Structure formats: C-alpha cells, structure tokens
Length: 103
Image 1 (cartoon, rainbow, N blue to C red):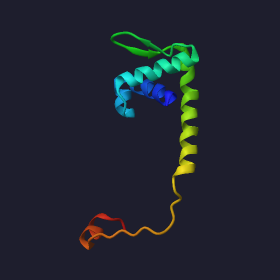
Image 2 (image 1 turned 90 degrees about the vertical axis):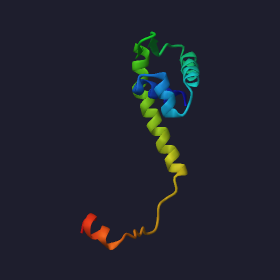
Image 3 (image 1 turned 30 degrees about the vertical axis):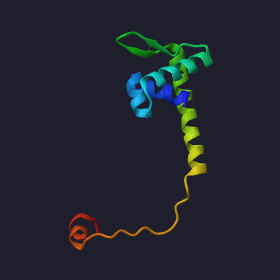
Image 4 (image 1 turned 120 degrees about the vertical axis):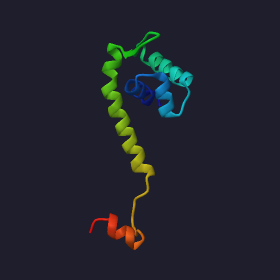
C-alpha cells in the first residue's frame, strides 16, 4: 500500500489526486508517505506550497517500486482471479446485428 501510494503520487503530481484515485483522504495519503519515508530513512518528495517533485532518492525508488507493484498485481491475479471457461453467447436484435456488427 505504501509503494502504491508513492507511485500514484508521482504519477498524479498531487497528494489530493492520488487520494482520489486510491479512494483515500489526502491526510491518509500524507500519513502513508510519512510511514514510507520513516521506514526508508529518506525523504522521497520535495514539497513547497505550490509544487511537489521527487527527490533524488524518490527518483531512484520509482522504477523498482513500479516493478514490485506489477509483480504483486500479477501474483494476486494468479491466486484470486477465477479461470474463465465456457462459451459466451450474445443476443442482439437482427437490425442492430446487421447494421452495426462486422460479418
């Protein structure tokens, strides 16, 4: 969760927008960044009242964080997404099928 928060902030450029994307409040996002920075002993974002940017340490963390999140998402999908089997049938009115669907 902490790395996902970090990556989302870097992508959106805002704690507030990251919170909206992740379904959390801005204050929760701030706390998660603080926890991550405390764990790493590094400052990841340079903050001013008008801007937000990654520090050199934040830049170094961004690529590995994205890789870890991809691996995490793949592992979770492998375990929890059911295998798809069977046939799919689609019923549509003939006038729609002949006018809008390819042959």
